[in-house]
Image 1 (cartoon, rainbow, N blue to C red):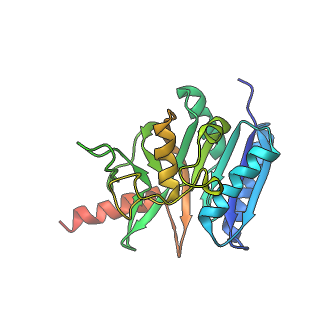
Image 2: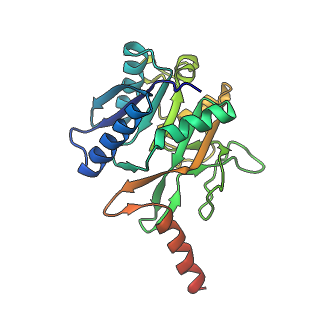
Image 3: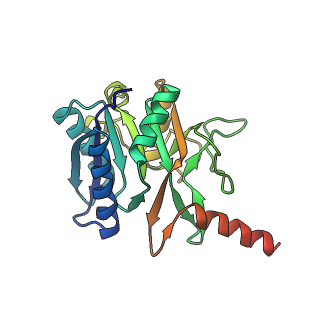
Length: 230
């Protein structure tokens, strides 16, 4: 199958980590080797929700690539990362795929940034703190640490409140989890409502740059220690 072009988009406050820059540079080189490298869209702003909308606008206005790989500027990516996401999108015929990313819960527990439907209320989204999917899986939402999104999704989505916040907005009526969902999670929920499923590929791994990088090894180690102390 002939590779499709993938643009890269991110926003930052003016400077980025050297770890992110090095990883992104290696990934761009990898994408050029696989003939899928498109354009780069970077927006400098301290207002994240506004900057994310501007990235999408630049992508739609300045590029004809079918895919935008949205990344956070405090991440490190494994080899062939965006190609893994694209391969999952092609295999499952979906237009949104995220890689595996972790965040700290309560400043100490690494948890996968994956959201599932609640039971019995599907709008009460929840995180599975101690589980990582073993294979590509449909989920409700993730963060935007690493997400491959087709332009069809952006073109189909209409503003919920204001045109300047067409894709990313902080809304009060998206979920029943007050304070849990930011504009990234809300974007995926709104996309699902208009017919676009999101999948996560757990083999496309990232490391979230904090004081330390956290990934699958740290997640596994946390639960091993929990078992030893209970």
